[in-house]
Image (cartoon, rainbow, N blue to C red; front, top):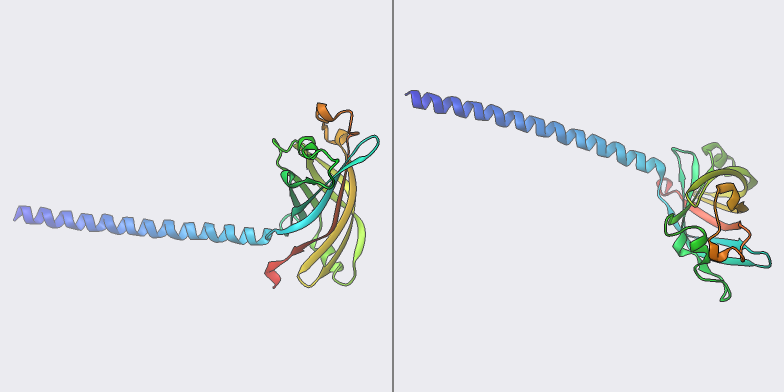
Length: 210
């Protein structure tokens, strides 16, 4: 009889332990689902990138310009930061003619260390609402990361909006000196340190409003 009582007590304790483990597992599962849901909501607010946008980057020399182009510019409007975020993979820049050194842009932008050129244009929701009626051209504050250094400047942006798509164009120039940047030694005789950037009719599609 004592043995049966011990076994019964042991089974009862084991059942209690299993119930506790089950309850704790359910709690952890609900907690994980809550965190995942919050993360997904935050990612939705940031929006998805629209790819296949074109950009031209020209490196100025004393006598000529060395022009490169890419069709891999990524664009999105981040509703959290109220910015148009642009990402350019530096390695995607290709020379626009045969006389341009193929790797000059990659080396000048320090592509091996900083593989992306980042441009964030301050673009509040109120501005996007205003351009629903008519296209506008005005200066906006842009934060640009070049050779690993961030710098703010004002750039002109022509912007338009049709339904769920934002269209914009901009042309501006940068000086490496303003970013505490440097020209690779092999290109010192060829470059002045001025970089011209041209983006024509880039677009971001807001997939949430479809």
